[in-house]
Each structure stands twice: as C-alpha cells, then as structure tokens.
Length: 266
Image 1 (spheres, one colour):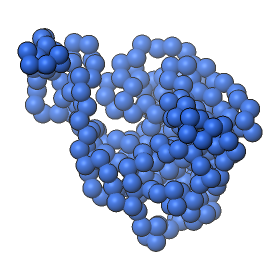
Image 2 (cartoon, helix red, strand yellow):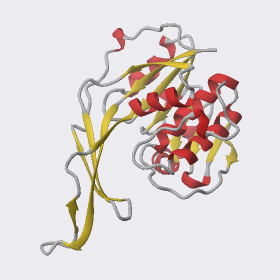
Image 3 (cartoon, helix red, strand yellow):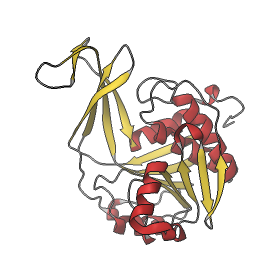
C-alpha cells in the first residue's frame, strides 16, 4: 500500500567542512583548524531531512509533499576529522518569513507531518489552524513552548531538553494540551506521555558517530510506522531503531528499510 503525506516546516542546507585541530590559537584559548578540503559536504536538513528519511525508510512506499521556506538557511559545521567532533557551527539566514496558509490544500493525504524548527515559518496561529485544514491526523515535532495550539495534533514530539524548558516556563499543565507527547531521551530511548501517565521505551546502546539530524530520523520513523500500524507503541519502538541506526553514520544521514533488523515497510 502506498501512502501520501504532507511535510510542512523549515528546511536548511547542512554543510560539513573537515580539518584537523593541532594547536590552540595564540590570540585566544580556542582551537585552530587546518582545513583538509575547502569543498564542503552538503545535505538537505530539518524538514527536508524528515522528507528524505521518510522516503528512504519506506522504500518509496510513502509519497511526500514538502512545503517549506524558499530562502536558504545554512548550517556549516567545522569538524575535526581525527575525532569527528564539531569545532564550531555557523548558522546563516537563520530566519524565515511566515507561510501563507491560503496556498495550502489537502490533496487526500494520509498524514500531516509538521517539522517546526521555530525559525518563523509557522506561528502559533498557523499551528492552531493547520490540522483543521486536513482530513487526516497530524503529528508535530516542535521547538516551541507547548501551549493550547498543540491540542489538535494527534502526537507532539520533543526532546528531553525541550521538555525541561517547557516545564520551567509553564509547568506540567502543558501536557493537558497534548493527546500524546513523545519525548526523546537520546541514547536512553523515548517516553510517551498520555493523560500524564508515562511509558518508557528504552533502546540498546550503540557507538555514536554523529547525532546531527537524528531527531529528524526518529520523527520520520515514528510517522512511517504509524501509517503502517496505526499504533504509537509500535511507532516509537520503530523510531528508536531508526535513530540507533542513523547515529552510527557520519553527518546528516538516512537509514533504509534494509538496515532495520526486524522492521520492514513491506
């Protein structure tokens, strides 16, 4: 069976420039990086990375429409090649103009997927309106403080740092606005909150190469498996497997169905 989804959110270009840090700058206590190659590696990131991972994970069984910013956000990471560690990340054009909702139509999608990096493309008002514009369920991964705008979404996904930040700002009452809240915990797995009751989904440890874009891959796996099974329980377990696979790769990467032991989209 083939599914149709609409992904809405900010996208960027992820650039990776490699070099070696061999000494400390004499003018300041910062590392100096000797570039090995001035031609950076590039990937499409953020919402575009969610789209790309959905297509890889589903082996083409999910048709993805991407609605995103026209201006280019660029994230350039300077990497020490010996240790594969980021020395510095430089962000350019790190803001978007708000989207015009009048140009968005429901094309018979099976799921609305919102990848909200909070760069200005989607306001809280947009998020309140978007789910009602589609006849399908809606999932969101957001960097915003969760408020009443989250109520129409079937599932809200954030990470543990975003969870703690929201708790500090508004307390645990924000969970009243979430039908289902998925909180990723890095190498510990993920938690699902439903009616403020928490269920944990631990994951097996792996050797981590790069965590860049891992949240996008988790979100892509979550939505792919939910389309197939209509089960958040199965979807979170599958998303954990997707994240485990992608963090073992360098840069902003994708995983395919063939790489995921015991999980197929067939």
